[in-house]
Image 1 (cartoon, rainbow, N blue to C red):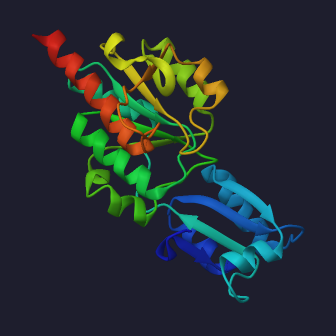
Image 2: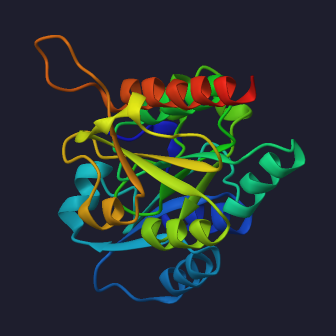
Length: 249
């Protein structure tokens, strides 16, 4: 379910949103329709790098009952995205080792908001999310972040694995959360680091996991076998904080 205030429907409204500089997270267009208005929208979408999905009318009707959508629906971001380089610059300007949180297909806006909140409290320099297969910066995300979205930058990238490869060249190590990994207490989580949190149901994907240097698990002593994604992120983030504090003594 998307936030109603994050949805724009109708050809003129969507086109004006692009031209006014709004960040469009995702664009849904009726498959097979090509006219001057649709062509203009597609041209603006490609300039911005917006994810475009060509769908059947039934999908559009489900998303926006009635004919108001005119074959076009757009999801706008509630906040502006930053680049990965801008996030790294924040760390460098503070003379700190970069601490990034990378999310692999987090779909629940409440989870994303809670993760941004935890990232801010733990002193992470930013959060990286994928363009596809994950929630963007909706109004619900902003609300769930309890204001942290105003202080913790979020970057949206086309390919998570390629971004991790680029960051490795800049000296970052990566640890992903997985129940089958080594206890987080037995890992060295100091230095420039990226914490990878996977999808709420599937966990970290195989391709992303292959790019990780360490696989960390959280010791669980209860009857339930796993933690919510945002809680796991908070726990592992604070183990990184703890180890940084110890190293600094």
